Length: 251
Ligand SMILES: [Zn+2]
Image (tube, rainbow, N blue to C red; front, top):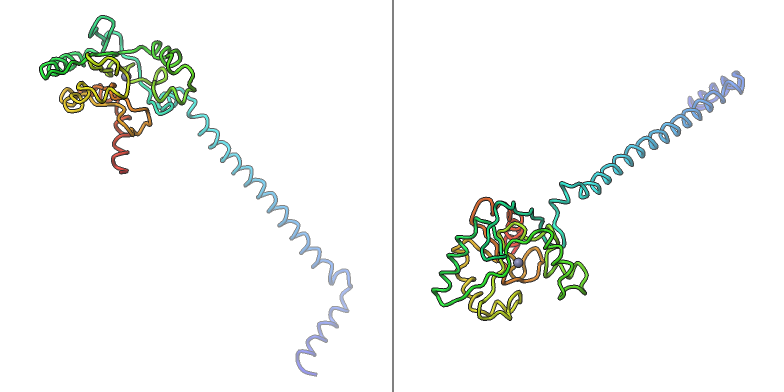
C-alpha cells in the first residue's frame, strides 16, 4: 500500500466516523445558500442597474426631445431651410418709396446703388423690402402661384412667417425697370440689372442671399439681396453666413 492509498483510507475511515448528516449536508447546504445568495444579489443588482440605466437613458432622451419645443430652441432652429429672423423695430423703418419700407441703415446705400446703376445705363427697380411677419404669413399661404403646393415646396420659393430676411428690413428684392416680366423670376439673371448687381452690389454691401446651390437649399433667387454693411445687419445674418462658410470649407 503506497502513501496516497493509505491517506485515502485514513480519510474514508474518518468520514465513516462522522454521522452522514454532519459529514455531507452542512457543506452542501452552505454552498447552495451561497449560490442562492449570489443569484439573488446579482438579480437585485441587475434590476437596480437596469432601472438606473433606463431612467438615465429615458431622461436624457426626454430632455433631448423636449428641448426643441422650448421657446428658446424653436427660435434658433431653421424651418424648411429658412433661418429665423425677428421683425424690425417699427422706429427703424423708413419709406424708400411710398408703400416700400426698409431699415433706415440701408436707405443711403440703396439710393447710391440705384443712382450709380442709372449712370451706367442700368435701371434698377426695388420690388419688396420690409415685410411684417403677418404679411409674410399671407404670402406663404395665399400666394396664388404656390397655393397648390405643400409646405416643403412652398418653402423653396417663399419663407414661412418669422423666417424671412424681409422681416429684418435689411433684405430687398430688385428688378429691372425695363424687363418687368422677369420680376421674381429666375430669368432676372439674364437682365442688365442683374449683371450690374452681380458686379457691383458688394460695393454697397449687398449680397445675394440665395445663390444657386446655397447651403440652406432655398430656391435660387437672383432678385433677393441682403445688406451686410453694419454690425447689426451682420449679426442678423451670422448663422446664414456660418452655413455659407461651412459649405465653402467642405468643398
Ligand atoms: Zn426677397
